[in-house]
Length: 310
Image 1 (tube, helix red, strand yellow):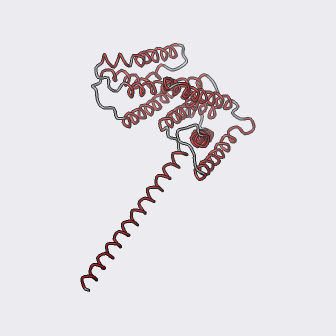
Image 2 (tube, rainbow, N blue to C red):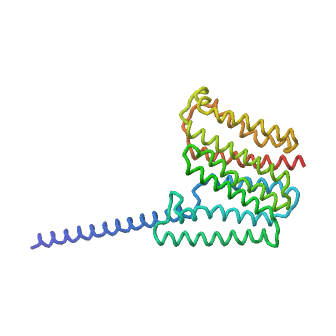
Image 3 (cartoon, one colour):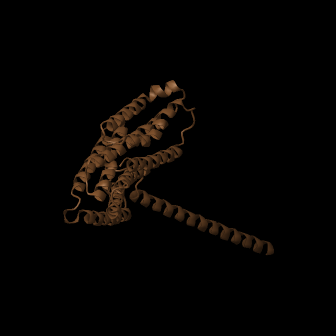
């Protein structure tokens, strides 16, 4: 009897242990499912193109920095910043709801969350833009907005046509993102003049070079020797020459101060150094941070050039 009681007690303990393990496993599974659900909800709502944030914000800071040299009216730039961030953010949940992106809202819960995000972001954007456009103020913002919308539409069309147009589509989309430089300058100074156009163009040239460089590094990362890199990246090398020539023409015609060329110097050096540096494994995250540093340096130097020249 004692032996049977011991066996029964052992079996009971084993059953309790198995039950506890099952409970822990069930809890872990539920936690993993909840975590995956939260991550999916974030992916449906939060923009995934992290580099595009820089392509939007750096031109805006550049335009605002140059404009604030002439006036201290900073309230419009805060309204524009809120509107631009809300509109840029709005793109991701709208695409998720319409099913035009890789991540699509599939369940009723997901569609409800995405719709709520769209409503909130749209409300914020409308209020900020309403304050900027109230009583007929800043009418050129409408034209800048139309130009940006056309650029984004053209980008979406190019993406659908062929993967070979991917880099071109990114540069076309950058036309819309860099319009924030002209918009920032305009809302602060109330002038859409030559400086506004130069700010837009300079930021577009800078961003276009960045996109070309990143694509070259990613797709030609196996190239080792100078000859191999030049053979595969010759379009980027020509782009460097074209960019420098175009910038010199702008300065020669008096459209941009000569000292502003210094803002592009680190970009040009980085581009040429790529062809001569020793081969090393490509770390995409490190490349991203490096390009962000390039953008910050450009922003500071370009603003400083206008402060010194005018």
